[in-house]
Image 1 (cartoon, rainbow, N blue to C red):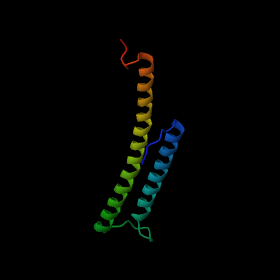
Image 2: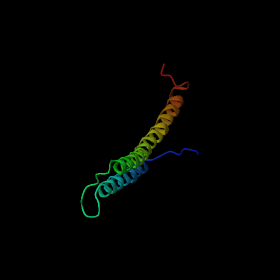
Image 3: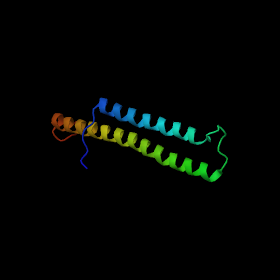
Image 4: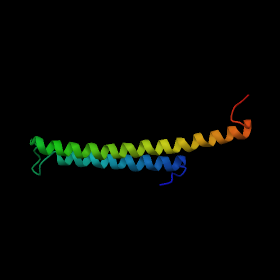
Length: 94
């Protein structure tokens, strides 16, 4: 997959999408920690499985944020290097 340059607006949209999904995951966890009658779950195996699932989903969204930021900065760094080469011919300011 070829990476494309991200604008600040696109980076912000990715942040928004990821955090909305994080919010949904945490809300779903909260609801799953309680039984239909309102009592909290006390079965450790079920709660452990819920937490494992949530951790996986949270990590995916955090990875998305991290990768988007890396992609944004990678293109900005490459642009700066190109500008330096134009200004200083060899990329060094001598």
